[in-house]
Length: 229
Ligand code: ZID
Image 1 (cartoon, protein in one colour):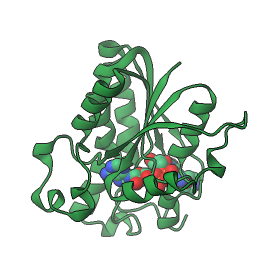
Image 2 (spheres, helix red, strand yellow):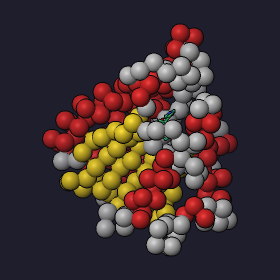
Image 3 (cartoon, helix red, strand yellow):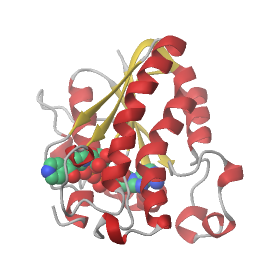
Image 4 (cartoon, rainbow, N blue to C red):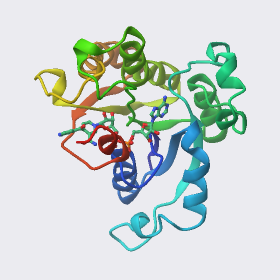
């Protein structure tokens, strides 16, 4: 069977959860990366059976998540984590959640993966028009929504088996003007799409893995509700 790591699962409403279920139904072993500030509530909800109904697979069994890894894809390694995050009580309870450390831990615990899914995005100023977006807001959107994929791919590629596949989720606001998708999120998706082409070339040659992105339709996830879509 194949093993998949899905980055960006923190409840049962988003694309990450749905992708995990499809992969589980197809026989894959499921590992997920959960944003550190959302980790406690996700794990306790899982434990308390809150997701049992939505864990149901077509054959009637429940999706098993082999391991939930805390992850903040905005930080590549421990040296990159600023003091205020290190000491923040939402982060202090978890450890080894930078991209490099998560890849190392998955390697130690599982050896390799076949599928890497990037189902995460964050744009702190998404509700502001691009014209009103601050430099910090714009850079934060790119960091969380675009560079996070480059970082995940770089750190996971060495443990993705040849023939493996990676995918991210994009949005058509990258190529057409969609009011309401602000804060540099349209820019972030444009970067993600361009990066997908370049990384497919590079990672295809270097690691024999595929790199794709799929433009998603509307889904009432937590992220979509936050922007009023
Ligand atoms: P989600 O909230 O379930 O997933 C996003 C996840 O990212 C959450 O679990 C966060 O905790 C996590 N996250 C945020 N920051 C970080 C971080 N620094 N490190 C680690 N994790 C982090 O929402 P989702 O399922 O909507 O989002 C998954 C992907 O789908 C994202 O790339 C979205 O941009 C993309 N996507 C979603 C939709 C949608 O409708 N839900 C659309 C297009 C793309 C879309 O907005 N018409 C109108 C709107 C849309 C499509 C059509």
